[in-house]
Every structure is written in structure tokens, then in C-alpha cells.
Length: 343
Image (cartoon, rainbow, N blue to C red; front, side, top):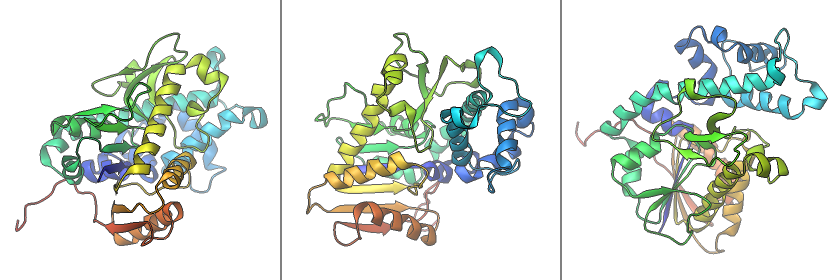
């Protein structure tokens, strides 16, 4: 029986603690950790002020990453309807002000989920914990799907000395000698160029530093938004960033293939959020491709049983009512450290 381990932001949060904020915590975490962030990232701050007048759950003190990123992305993509001007913010060098706000959000992510997490990740792999226990169970031919931008899973795979490879356009789908890592939302240690001009995506040992990021050289991140332009088969992507396009397509395609054949799915800290429509399509396609009578054992790690119930309802929408094609078991919260029995 092959296994798939699915990791969401809650897996990093449970393993690393408050220094790895989940989406709803992002604004409050940023204010607490980088008190002058609104002076450092002027365009992002202006975008938050603007959006706070239009979205009831966005304020300068508290905002969700997916909500704000989605709103910025929509403003850029629907620019001919809404325009691209942020009040009192100029658009230098041919850039639009909403686009600069999105670029600054990438800088913030590189700082918060990259540089500031390097030390906590190194400590986490020494302690043990729920993710490490589950990764140690994996065998050649199994798969890890990480929807996170951080490099926690890569560090753990290396530390427990598992043989693994990332999904690429050149990966042989029938090869079973290693564990396959899919990151459909990209990663902070993938260095990409735009336009690529022949440059391949580079896989770094650690996340890109904020100071290394420019509009033409940046980490390859796919926002949790309804319309992911990076994976849309368009002339723009195939002309300006074909290597990244094919790399991301390989992540999604490989993830669907492995999910469609797995006998065991372990979900850690992922709630199937409605904002991420592409991920819903991914799981629904994988469910549809499964053999009619093939059973799936699903194990869910969540913060509490109430949250497990919410996640289970989303799973029912994708795989159908439990008890027919799958069983679903609550495994408790993702823990940073597993204590020995009796201690």
C-alpha cells in the first residue's frame, strides 16, 4: 500500500510554533515581529489600508495572507476594470503600484517563512515530532505533497536520510526507488527568473534571502488565489517563463497521479480552504481517477476534534461519504515533539 503525506501550513505551525504563522494569523504576526513593517514595505502597507476600506475582515492590525494576496492578485489581473492606482503611491519605472505591493509581499514571505524560520527548522529536526514520525514511515514509491513555501519537509527528509527526489518534467512516473516530493505552490528555495531568457529554475540548499530578490530574480511562489496564472497554459507563460511553467505543471500532475493510486493519505494541518480552487480541482480529479472499489485510508492531524469535523466535511465533498470508498480517522494535533510513553 502506497502512502501520500499532505502537508499544509498547520503542519509547519504545529512543528515550529508561533514563528510559522498560518494564513489568518499573518497580519498580527507581522505587526508583532516586525513592528515597523509598514515603513519598510510602503506599497504593501498602502494596499492593506486600501483593502481595509473594502473588506470587513482586513485591518492594519489583523489580516489573512490568502485574503490580502488574493485581493492584490485580483486587482492586478482585473486592472482594466478597476485601474491600478493606490492612493498617493507613485508607479515608478513603468511598474504599477498594485504590482509593487505584490512584490513587497514576496519580500515579506521570504523574510518570515524563509530567513526567520531557518533556525527554528534546524532545531525542529533535532527534536522529533509528528511530521518526522510520519516521514520516517514513508517507503520508496510514497509521496509527500507540501503546499507550504518553507523548506521544513526538505530538511526533515535529508535529516532522516530518506532517498527523495522532487517532481520535475523529466521525472519518470514509474520510478519507485525514492520518495517523491511535490510542491504545487512552489518553494522559497526555487530561484526563478522573469523573463527567463533561457535560465532554468535553480534549486537552492536554502530559501532565497530577501536581499537577493529583484523583480527579475525571485523565489517561485504560487499564490493561494482562484486564478493561478503560473500554471495556465498561455502564450505569456510559455514565452516568458516556460521552465517554471513546466516545473509547476509537473508538481500538480504528479500529485494527482500519486493521490489517485494511494492506499493511505495522511493530512497534516491542511483544511482544503475554499480560496484555493485549484487544489480542490486537484483532489477531485485524483478522487475521480481512483479505481471504483479501491479503498483509501485517510488520517487527519488537526488542532482539535471540532476542526477535524470541518476538514472531514470538506473531504466528504471530494471523496464522497466516508465508509464507502474511504475511512477517516482523527490523529490529534501536529506536535513539535513526541514524548516517550510514561514521561
